[in-house]
Image 1 (cartoon, rainbow, N blue to C red):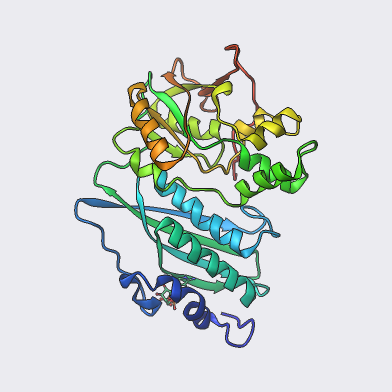
Image 2: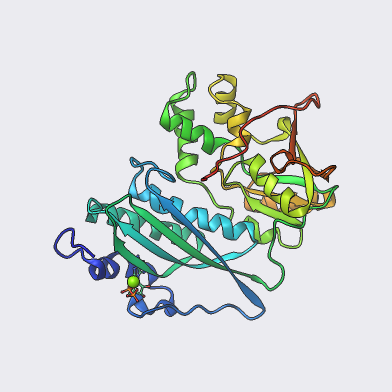
Length: 337
Ligand code: ADP
Ligand code: MG
């Protein structure tokens, strides 16, 4: 690759910034081999996911290296969690621009190191190339789950309840906060919402605990309605959400009260990286136990219902207000194409 500064060529970057992140994985061979080896515990299957992030699209050009690293890793961890898998290892493909200096790489690697400790995952390989831009990175994460028990999108049944972890809408409101501000919302709430956009909290501990309880699961990346729509599509069902039950943070409630954000942002916006799942109603006590043990709110927000006709795939999820009246919300999630 093109040398940006003396001592920062491809191999120097790998040795200096990334090999330390692979030190705890014997199968990574110190990033000095052509590929890594990964052991899966007996009776388990490997669960694999990959997410690419492009500067200007998935993160803002003004985001710090630490935020970019955390987001790139966490969105992958969220995918593993939604499958009920425990994180094991990840690879990192980086297309760096000439402007990406040593300081950026240092902060990027330090942030990955912190998240590796927090979420119990280790770097095992990757690729480092140069690009005229924009800065692009792709993480591939590997997790494991007892064979045949992974959570899928396809198992929801009419009569199931719909649950969600954490709070919904913060990331979408946080993006608005960062892009144009939320009029009438104070600085602390602005900050709290922006932080939820920049640093999602993947539910890595919760996901595996849902195995055997949830019939279907997904993580909220495109937006609550769109992602519940994905569950309904693959499960052959429809669903109804009660807006009054959707868990909102204090900051999101403030934005809603100020009229700076609406239900369309909260239910239609993406990037929350909470777990959304369908489970039978009688799983509720077990779920309450998990919520308490992990200190992660789990809230019942609606129900899975029979799909009546050859329903429009964009209209599989209905929303009703506190009085039971249907709410009309146009946006149903971010689409790349
Ligand atoms: P190859 O030429 O076979 O693609 P490389 O020379 O690109 O191999 O990589 C050498 C080693 O460094 C490999 O083990 C690879 O997985 C690792 N590596 C390269 N880039 C990264 C990166 N950004 N993060 C982690 N490991 C990396
Ligand atoms: Mg290579």
